Amino acid sequence: MWSLLSVLLAVVLLTIMIAWGKVQPLLAFVVAALVAALALGMPLAKIPGAIEKGIGDLLGSLVVVICVGAVFGKLIADSGAARRIAISLIDAMGPNRMPVAMTVTGFVVGLPLYYNVGFVLMIPLIFSLVYQSGRPAVALGMPLLAGLSIAHGFLPPHPSPTALVAAVHADMGKTLLYGMLVAIPTLIIAGPVFAMTLKNIRAEPAAIFRGDPKPDHELPGAFASFFTALLPVALLGALTLVTLLRPELAQPLAFFSNPTVVMLASYLVAIFTLGIGRGLSLPKVMGSAQEALREIAPILLIIAGAGGLKQVLTESGVSAQLGAQLASLPVPPLLLGWAVATLIRVCLGSATVAGVTAAGVVGPLAQTTGVDPNLMVLAVGAGSLMFSHVNDSAFWMFKEYFGLSLRDTFRSWTMMETLVGSVGILFVLLLSLFV
Image (cartoon, rainbow, N blue to C red; front, side, top):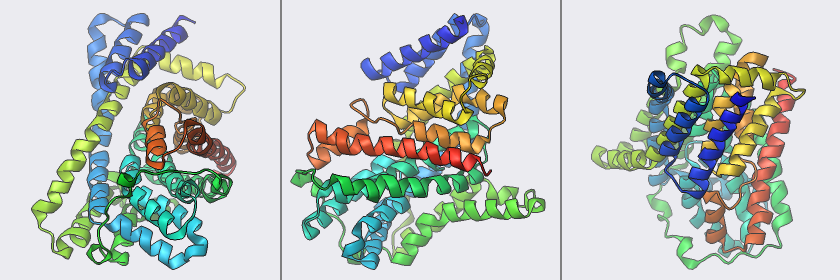
C-alpha cells in the first residue's frame, strides 16, 4: 500500500509543479523522481545514479530518431512541400470532397511534422479555403487538425510513440503498421464524420492568422513533396512487412530497418529533392535544421525527465509490483494502459508528457501480462489524447486562432480529441483480437 501511495505522491507532486507552478518539466520530473525514491526507501547513494541512468538509457535510444525526425519535418515545412501536398489533394478531390481532402491532408502532413508545426503551417491554408468556399471554418478545419493530432499521438517517429516503443520494448515498424490500422478508421470518425456536427459553430479568426503563404510557383512539385514526406513511413512499413512475411530476412535487413538508419536516409533524400535539387545551398538547408533542433530541445528534456522517474520506479521494485497488481485487476491490460495515460493527460495537459509518463507505469504491465507491446503503445497513445482542456496549449491555440468562445472550443476541439482517444482504444482492443 505504501508503495502505491509513494507513486501517487510523486505523480501528484509532478502535476502540481507543472500545471500550477509552471516548473520546467525536466526539473519537475527530477524532483518527483527524488521524492519517489526517498519515499520508497531507496539507498541514498543509489538515487542520483538511477536518475542519471534512466535519462541516459531513454535518450540514448531515441535522441537521433527524434532529432532527425524534427529536421526532416522542418524541411518538409520550410520548403513548401506540406503546402503543395495540401493543394494537390484539394485540387484532385474537388470542392465537393473538400472534407475528405482536408482529412487526408492532415494525416499525410502530420506524419513528418510535429503537431504545433503542422498546426501553424496549415492554418493559413484552412482560412484561405474558408474565405474562398464560404464553408464554416471549424467544420472545414477540424478534419485536418484531427489528422495532425492522430499522427502525433499514435505514430512513430513522433516523440511520445517513439519513447513508448523504447519503454515497453515494442517494434517501431510493427507499431507503425498497427498504428495505421487504428489511426485510419479513428480519423474517419473523429474527422469528417464529427465535423458534420460542427457546421453551426461560428468562428471569427483574426486577420493576422491568415498568413502570407508562398506563391504556388515557388513550391516544390507534387511528386517530390509526396514522395519525400511519405518516404520514412513507406520504408519502415515495407521493411517490416518483408520481415513479417520472410522471417529469415529479419537479420540481414536489421541494419536497413533500424529507425535511425531509415530517418537518416529519408533526410538525405529530402536534402536533395526539396533543397539542393531546387537550387538551395547546403548552408541554407542546414539553417533550417538548426532551427528545428532548437524547437525539439524542450521535448527531449521532457523525455529525459520521464526516463529518470521511470528508472527510479524500476530500481525500487515498485514498478514490477504495480505491474503485478494492475495485472490482477479484472480489466484488460490495454484498457488499463489507456486509463493511466488518460488520467495523466487530464492532470498535466500535454499529450507528450502523458505518454512518456505513463510508460513508466505500464511498461511492467506489458511484460507481466504478455500483451502485445506494440498495441500497448497505441493504447497509451489513445489515452494521451483524451480530454484536452484548459491546461493544454493546443486547446488555447485552437481557441485563439479560430476566435471561438470557451463553450464552442469544448464543443469542438475537446470533443474531437476525446473522440480520438475513445474510438482509438476501441479499435486497439478490436485489433488485439487478431494479432
